[in-house]
Length: 231
Image 1 (spheres, rainbow, N blue to C red):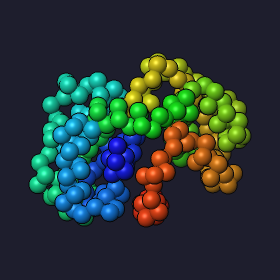
Image 2: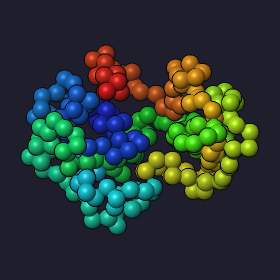
Image 3: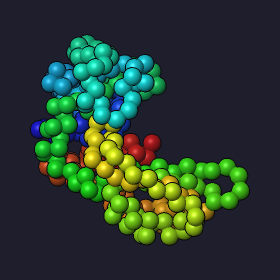
Image 4: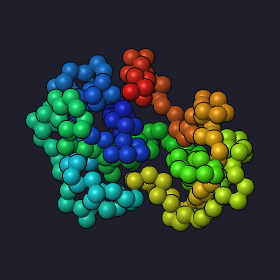
């Protein structure tokens, strides 16, 4: 696996990605536009990445994508010209070409990175209007990890608001399904953990479930990623 393959696969681990000009900064530092088009073209040809139109997102949505690929007619292999055109679009809202993890890409990524799925968690939080506890959270993952997260990062969980369920199978990501997990929803008065507890760094580290190969993570790419997340 090259560092460019890794960056592209890493970008779509947990969601579909629109292909437009900014992606050149995300994965192609050190490449010419022609070389970037060649990398993408080869990955689409090899089923490392799956290409589809934005209008087809509803068809693609859901778990077990790699099991459903053969039953969906929306995937295609874009031509180099189509890829180049997508990479010339400045506004992601105007981009139609979208990519997701492909069967071969998932195989290569897992073999190379060796992720620890026993550490993986899904986390969602939302503000609740009205009186009472202001924030609702949902955590999904292995029971031991959920218990640890609640004890360490959500000490102000409001008594009586916890609701547990068994998830079997568990669609951990849109392309990865695991045998079982648990899910819990609960409420807090504050938006724990990052803001109120001032534990943002610890929370981010807690959520880590795989390591980026150091040989692929160059300083310029790290800075580009920081700018991307900072918006």
